Each structure stands twice: as structure tokens, then as C-alpha cells.
Amino acid sequence: MSARCIAFLLLSTLLRSQSPSPYAGRPNLAGFGAMRPSGYPNDSFDAPLTFDFPEPAAPKPMAATVSLRELEQSIPEKALRAADEGHRYALQNNTRKAIQKFERAIRLAPGYRDAHNDLGVQYAQAKRYSEARAEFQKALEIGPPAAPIYLNLGLSSAVMGYWEEAQALALQALQLDSGNAVARQLLQYASER
Figure 1: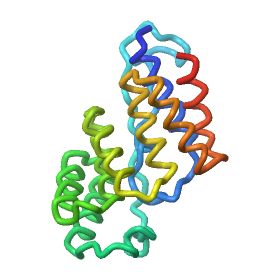
Figure 2 (figure 1 turned 90 degrees about the vertical axis):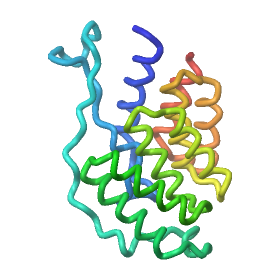
Figure 3 (figure 1 turned 45 degrees about the vertical axis):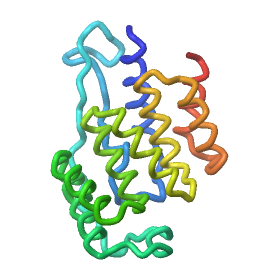
């Protein structure tokens, strides 16, 4: 089995066990579904791998969900509306439209950290991993540091086979959130590569 297949399997296993984050109600990498060989038992890996995306959850109210960073910054109302529309499309599993809305939010407010993170998640779901990594890195540059963003960047790095980077990012996520089980699993898996 190739390293990329192993990374995909790790990614799906980690994401299924991910506990709720400060981004609850917003799209994150937990939107990935379980990965298993088509038509084979879960322990057989001789078949092509496929994604099973979960049914979209009932939309959660977004109007009351505002990050501290959004409160500290003056983010234009149009950018906030575009991001909210992106969240709605993401909940409907419409990745293409969600990407368009998050890109618009970023054009309107380049320093909108959460929109960069959410756009990265959508890129990852579209298997555009290098673009996802770039968005997660931008979100971290904008700051302040957040464990879910380090973890998103680490998972996308692992999928691309950048094991040392994934390990370092998992450590950074654990420094900010020592109880994060997904970061611990990513650290263990990446350190074995």
C-alpha cells in the first residue's frame, strides 16, 4: 500500500474520532467521510479507495457564531455574509460554491483568518491539498495561533507525505490543546514514518 493511501486512511480515522472544536458549527476537516475499499470488508485493502461523505447535518445557527478574532477585527459585513453563505454551502456539501463564497470573503477582508481556514478545509475536501495548506498557513500568519488550524495544516501535510512537517504541526497543536486526541494520533503516525 502506498504512503498516500496510508495517509488517507490515517486522515479518515483521525477525523472520525475528532472531538468538537472551537469551530463547532463551522465546516472543518471533520467533513471528510470514512474511507474504505469499495465493496470490501473494512480490513481488506486490495481495492481502490473511495470516500463516503456523511449526510449533511442540520444547519446550525450561524448568526450567533462569532470568533474573538472577528470581534477584535473590523471585518466588513459583506465579508461576514459571504463567509456565512460559504458555511451554508459547505453544510450542503456544495464544495464548489462554498469555495467561491470563502474566496469572496477573503477578497473583501484579506485578514479574515477564519475564512482562510474554512477555505482551506474546502480545498482539502476538493483534494486541492497544496492550496489547502497555503490557506491554513495564511490563517496561522494572521494569528493568533489556534490548535484546529495547526491540526488542519498537519493533516493536509500528512496526506501529501510531508511527515516531518505533520509531526511538528501536531506538536504545536498539542501545545495549544494538550487533550486533542486527533493531534496525538497524528503525532504518533507521523513519527513512525
